[in-house]
Image 1 (cartoon, one colour):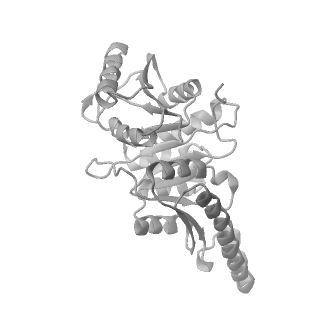
Image 2 (cartoon, one colour):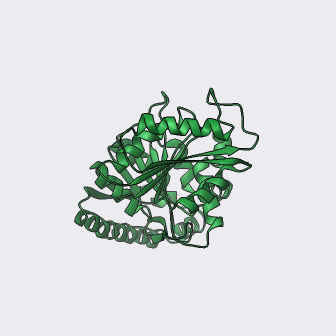
Image 3 (cartoon, helix red, strand yellow):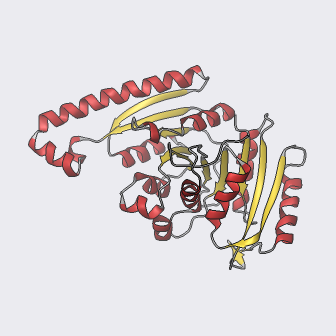
Length: 315
């Protein structure tokens, strides 16, 4: 199970929506929780309609009161204030993650304007990108990005986990963390793979399909069979761990198939492997991650792949 959760908080009720999630993930264990507030340089006086914490004393008082209110009898809950104002919040969070050695960072999706979020990235994506470039180690730290609905409510406890897989090991680093969540909350998982249909192939694949339609269709059929075998191996491994899990292979565009499956299964937690690219890089490379982040009505477990990240191993 998770041993240490890091919760970045900005003093708003919106950010505090992660607290019930964190409590649920450590319930029945001796895992530690660290609440973190970073003082931002030139921060706005208000955020989400509430006064924004701008000095060390008010931030410290806020976190002390929050611990007393939300964790009245739980040991191992600490708080920390970065009192020197920083120009880059994501960079500061990355430095604190290296210092505290969490095995999960839990933060709230604040929902900025779509085009800004798509091109510049939400804080979780910026944080992963900063971690990637600030640590020589390959130790990885996933981020649980908690998303609220249009009424400001977080769909928690989670009821179903959806894990897209493409057979590439570096894209499947989130399996272990997803399994921990599934076991802790006693909820099922679905491993999902999409094989593009013949008429959805693009670029060189599309040109090849036009010249060699029968050969291309055979290649896709074999890819579908190999994907099924690959999922079966992981399903068996997870079942041996005690996880309730199944697999599904679909002929569909990967992003569209994932979104359709998430709606069908009512998945409220989706696991996404990421190379911790900047959002701009991901946008221009047509990465499916930004599309899923903006269209799926779920929370996300962002799992950096091998070499993406991050922290030196704990002593």
